[in-house]
Image (cartoon, helix red, strand yellow):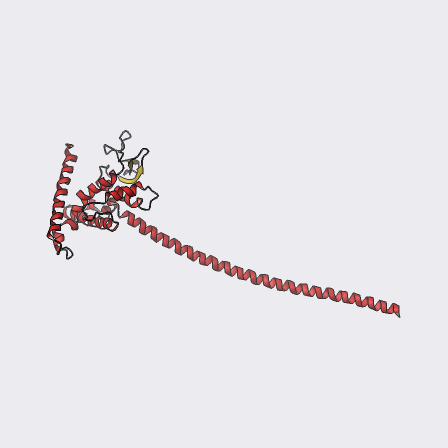
Length: 279
């Protein structure tokens, strides 16, 4: 009897062990299935999150790049407006003749006048450029956020009114070792050079070294003699026709008239000196 009990007990133990193994396998299979489902759910959630994140980042980058493009375009357009050569190009002065060219020049000058005024580059009486500010902005260097506008103002004056070869354009203001500045030039054939003492691009020509503070003053001279006196702001007829200036005091109008007369005389003198070489 004891032997039979032992056999039955052993069999029951084997059966219990087998049952436990079966339950363990079922539990492991259940765990593995739960883990598979969890991993699948986690991976799907992560995939959706990554997809959403990537899409959000794409939209953000697209928005940022578009905003930057618009800002750069606006900034470049603003800087370009300081370049007198570019403003005059818009009016295609070379294709116009006589009165049309005069009207277009006045319109271009009006645009430049407004641009300089909006950027606070004009003196309070508007008869001069604030050349000290121009010089300070140039001296601040290319890393300054004001350098580009001051540089374009100087380059525009140099291109439009400087003694450059036909088709040449002033392209940059560069600081020179030992102080002062040179104005680089791109010629009509694409070659590079600089403003020289004889106005030519010959290798033997001497590069002009503009002293610190000189560029702003030269730009101011061109503004006074070439731009300001040929704008509606300093035209007696336009002033009288302007509703904003009808009530202007007589003294102010007389001062403007005297300024125009004075700068016209200076301009005529400069033209005569340039033509005759008789300083």
